[in-house]
Image (cartoon, rainbow, N blue to C red):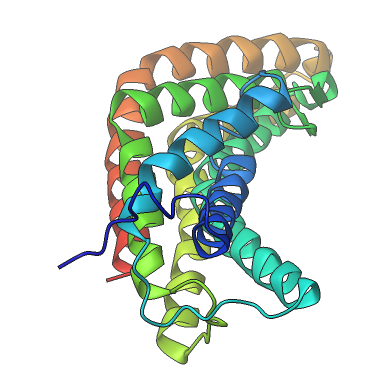
Length: 263
């Protein structure tokens, strides 16, 4: 039977230490996870949100058989650092979905001739093209609409059982292989989103090259730039439904793979 902290000893050092460790792991997740890391909200709001989630999860992870109270402040700081890194790693792996669609947007921007529009994205602090931001916003909406954020918190809750607090995580070959597989999904998502449009744009490049050979008097450079932009935007709208369905399936499978890491 799960032990529930009583109201009498709610503010005992043991309870406070456990709550701080839970709060720190959740904070690491919020800082790096999709949507939560990019949302334009004051840092204090994110801290209070993490504290609220920690208050909800605290009774679920209160009874940890492997937890040993730290005997000094340096030991406690090391435990906090470990918890933060665990939460940050979970959010970082989940955020690879966003990085995948960002890569897809950058590939298509280069192919369409829009790479010069690259600017600093204030939400993420990373330079992105306008097309990349469109894909990122689309993926974020799908992430929220499909309830993937719930699966993210389920994975976080499962991590307290798979990696108990106060225990230094030991990564075996199976876990490392699973993480490498998740990293490989980044390129699968990027090329899965970009390849249909990229293929048509590549064919248009070949046709424009043949046209320049057939009509050398025509300034093909001035013709190719607007033509490729119009074709790319048309294909972006034409494949929007298929891209939406593809991203929904990929996000679902990806979040299930993250949950399998802690089962």
